[in-house]
Amino acid sequence: MPNVATAIAHPNIALIKYWGKRDLSRNLPAVPSVSLTIDRFETRTRVAWGAERDELHINGRAAPFSRVGAFLDKLDRGRPPCAIETTNNFPTAAGLASSASAFAALAVAANAAAEARLDRAALSSWARTGSGSACRSLFGGFVHWNLGELPDGSDSHGRPIDASWDLRLLVAVVDTATKPVSSTDGMLRSQRTSPYWDAWVAQSPHWVEHALAAIAQQDLCTLGSLMERSTYAMHATMHSSNPPLNYWKPATLRVLSEVERLRQSGVQAWCTMDAGPQVKVLCAPCDVDVVHRAIAPHALEVSQHRPAEGARLVDAD
Ligand code: DP6
Image (cartoon, rainbow, N blue to C red):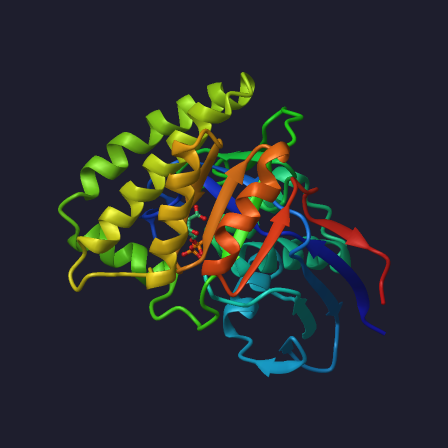
């Protein structure tokens, strides 16, 4: 009989962005980042360790096993065959951080099923090798992913930021098509071809430092402004790549200008976008309804999110 474990993980949205790798084989980041783990969207993953054969099902459909297999091999080179079933309750690969919750849930479930007993930091570091942003979804609330110094990358992982600050993040889905260029390919293209690359790498650690101070002081205006600066700087490296990378759609810009208009009328709300067209808006709980009403006409769907817990085991089946 296989050993079975099931885990849930939530996506996280970067407030200060990760974009670029200083070591491709270990998946070590070129810049540090800060994120918020959000509720309501989740990945649920069941791992049967010692199954008849390697197999992966995503939302009920068979999917290629190779990326997941290489990830599991890092836990145990002599592992038995594994059967993995994973479901997302939100669009996969549309810039909604599905790889973050996917590898975080897989790491927690596989660690339990294999009885490997990795601690949180080691789990986060391992999840990073599956997809960088996944290392942040091991933890709840605000999370800092530091660069790390060790050559093997084991000290480059998420760390929870001690802050009980109740913010809201709205996700405006404007397009559900799969993204044209993956985050991994996009960041490699940016770092190889964008003339703005060095400035991006030099500036990001300062934004992280200031964001950590803004979180400690619960200063939403400073945090929101830093988030927008990091976001636009990251997209500037994308737009200036060769060939250019543009993840935005017309509706992306409509939501952005709506939020700018709100801010001019005194509402504290700021935007971020990842490797996709969706817009995420950060605001205080008291402003969530006014922001929702303003952006809804420009989106297919708007959802409201609170800070969530990190990845965790749940009762199987
Ligand atoms: C734009 O974590 O998907 O969402 O490490 O290559 O798997 P890989 O990349 P991934 O990149 C996420 C990039 C981003 C910004 C962020 O989440 O910080």
